[in-house]
Length: 159
Image (cartoon, helix red, strand yellow):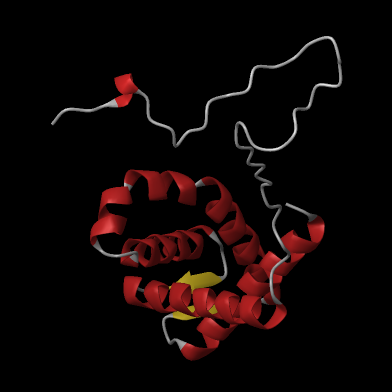
């Protein structure tokens, strides 16, 4: 992850946590430093713990049509509230609201500002027997392949 993407991610999480703490009664922070530590901890939890939780709860995620991811995000929000002094999440429903606000904030920011284009794979397709041969050696000749559409006596399939 590049430094600009990391800074963008932290800013979006900070904005989401700030909005969530101002819109929910169950989320509260005492200082700006507690907010920054929470953002850092949420980022670390998203990088290290979230993939494991996603892996172990994959059947739940599939059966709930993706709502399990929202529950995992709320759990991470609740864990961050328990670990950071000065940041308080009072209930799981408050954590659900906080994770929803952070997700919506990130989604809107990605729609407005866009994401960087990803590298695309290049596929090269070649068909046998079409086009000129690629050998440039005049002493060697390549046999002409048989066309794919021609049927011979042994190509009959009995059903």
